[in-house]
Image (cartoon, rainbow, N blue to C red; front, side, top):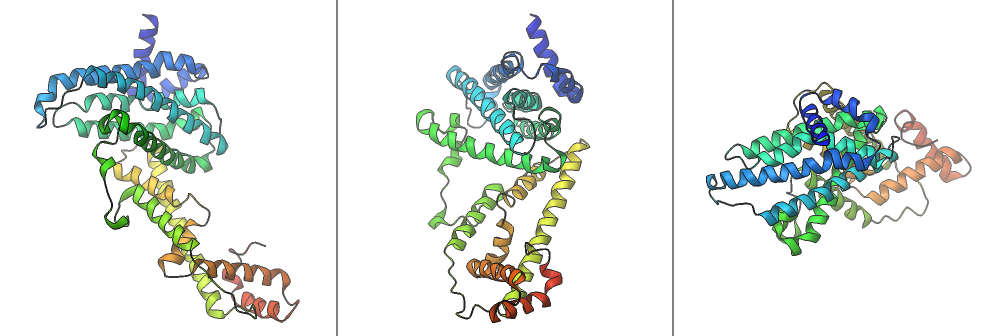
Length: 355
């Protein structure tokens, strides 16, 4: 009875006084078994059982009239436990990579506390007509709480919070989709979490029209694949042309500006979350889309080159030729020629050529 009282106290606190509840539980959060027994497990079971009851009560209000079964409910509990462990592992592992604490126990406590509204929304989605909207609102709120609890529990440095958070969301989505695809032949699309989306086909392999986060990631993958096919034969004399240097400068300035714009948007969203302002689904989507542009060092630079019809191999050669010219200067006629071009555009090139 005492454990049950503690569970309901944590759930109530996580919903109505989250930060005080987080700080109060933090001294006990380094024991993952306790968190699993006291909070994570009960949350998963309560959400599944409440969803089952509401599904039985209100399934007749839907056009399809779909009713949950005991088997589905039991499977949802099992998969809920698996998902909770995966998310905690991803959050904590990436926290370590981003300069925070790499602790599965703290990751499980943080994600379980943050996603209390999400578990509630999972159960309430069975409500007729408004269930989907309620689930969406509570899920977004849970994502905001996750953003706020990570620095407290996993101590990710302020300058790396955005990157850690975005990569966590992307990695979680990718892993859960892969697991869903693996499980789908065994348990069916509904229980795998993919539903009809697993049957989506792209005509003639064209993915350019896919929106949102996955569309952005796919587009970047397509551009990267196209860039890998680029070939460039440098001139026999090894000399740069002025138009090549000018184009290199244009690309680098545009890539820098895009990076700055993305950083400003992400920082603004992060500050809104810190102030506990309401976040929409489009806001979270914007954060994840921004994250897809940060998944590689040269991703934005590559996109600027390829979207303008440029040659990525030539772009890389120009960069190396300019860098070599800076270090070699006038050791020979080629270096002297290229260094003169470097000097002409030195003010713009200084920030882009490693010295």
